[in-house]
Each structure stands twice: as structure tokens, then as C-alpha cells.
Image 1: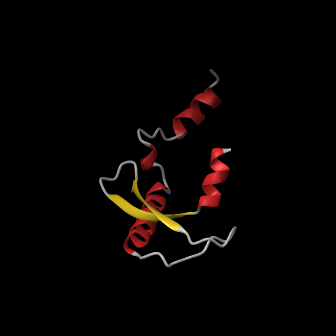
Image 2: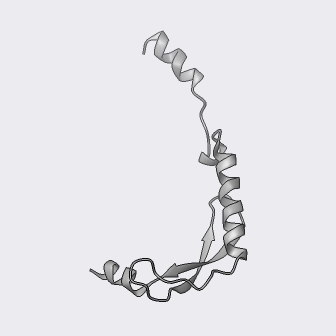
Length: 87
């Protein structure tokens, strides 16, 4: 190994965990804030933009790696979207 490549390797930080990388803290905070907001709000009665049918809501639990919290979010689903998954 050349001394230039050895020097470059010593300048590269070695992270033991992906959440320790710079910028990850802000991203994790943003995701937590988003999940807290959508889990506390009541979704409006909406119609599917694709077929116009009334949307149904599925209770879904989200967890963020490295965080003990979990959030229950009502995710909108339409039968026309499920038909595409079955094919």
C-alpha cells in the first residue's frame, strides 16, 4: 500500500453504527417528527385519486432503528391499488 493511500485511509472516519454518521441525527429527528405528526392526526375521509372510491385506512406500526419509540399511523389504501399488487 502506498503512503498516499494509507494517509487517505486514516483521514476517513470509521463509524461503528450508521446512525453516528454526520447528518443522520437531523434525518432521524425529521423522521421522528413526521411520524409523531401523522400518528396524532385523524386522516380525512378521502377518495382515491385513481378510481374515486372511498379510501380505507389500515393501522400500521412504524419503528425507527435505534429508537425505542413506535408510532401507529393510519395508511390510506384503495382496493384498486391492492388489485395491482395481486397481479
